[in-house]
Image (tube, rainbow, N blue to C red; front, side, top):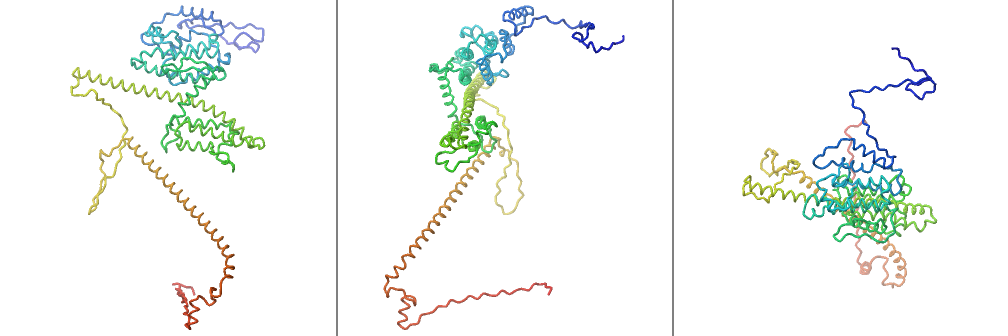
Length: 582
């Protein structure tokens, strides 16, 4: 068969050509070994809700019934099942302004390490009866209105189910409030899992309240009423998005953060080494974006005008805060925040007098106002992050202590059972708990002290097991040595300063003494002629010398003359050179 080439008037591939020729018939061959394609209808996002629901029911009826498996349902399967109940999902560009804010808030909330979808520590994403079917009756008897995070998100993106941000926040808060209600009885009984969920739900409820009141500032009302904590010390299960509640939540976070000690790394280690130092470093870097160089240029270096200290009692600059932070001089978060705020408050106070007349003062004042606003935004973010992190660490620490106590009780019970069964002798004390701790050991060879001997003997450094030290002890000794060197260096620096101040003070005193002597010499020159005029002939000094010499002359006794002996310098003999050309 000869293959015919395609003409330019009729392109290869069939219909839609420019010319009026006949199109070639396309025949599709299918492999009989492959199964036929499924005719399951697809659900369109643009279709109506009724049509989508009907198509979903038909597809479910045609598909075979899945086999039930024992045990909890996998999380991703449960999430897919919840999302299938809300097939319509609008894109972000079709959402209203408050819905976009709700979506951003929910996305930030899901970044929390405890409820992240990637590796969640606690499960709030799906209803409890789906993932734990055996708890269905117990859960329904305690919780009257179930809610989960996936359902709240799906209702938001489907649309028409929430009428404002308050409805969405109420549903998200209900997730953690239900968990507190359900696990309260188990917590009172001492169940480990219930205690963990109870404490985590309380913290997540607080974090949700703090985060929502910061995200929805544009939609806050002016209602002066505040939602107080419950009588048993629990946070409010729902709250109104108002300015009063935001101010109260901000005060709660300040109480947590401002007085929190900074976990400082050891001098000599890299900086930042702890998460608290990293948060302080982020706060400093938030003021050094490239777009802020124009406004920040006056507040970086410690270059102050000549009369600056006459108006400002405590000068402060960005560079000084950074040095203090790297030298570990700040003990609390509040000290860092206060110094950063002091930079711009000082600038506004000093430049407010001349901002109308001087161009530089006007730019510095306006830059201080702008950067003070950006600093407050960065402080708000840091306060939420630090408050959450501090609360998480407290809950984690409490959980670790409970786990250790539970393990200790289990170990004691095991030993008692072993003693009762005769596996261990009765002399074993069940209260003693044996632990195997793996430590990294560093062998250090120490020279043995040598005694004075009459003769020199060969010395050998023998290895001894007692010379071994653990890595922790070695690091502790190095740290103590370094701290001692730092103290000695500091005391030496103090001595240098005191010695220099003493020398300077003595030089000043010497200078004052010289000036006083010059002044007194001038006074004496003025008084000397008057004194000589008042003297009598007897009191006048003799031209021949003293009064004793005058009396000796009258008595005919000659005056002894002392002539100092002149020193004769010895002439050095010149030694001729050993070799001479003359």
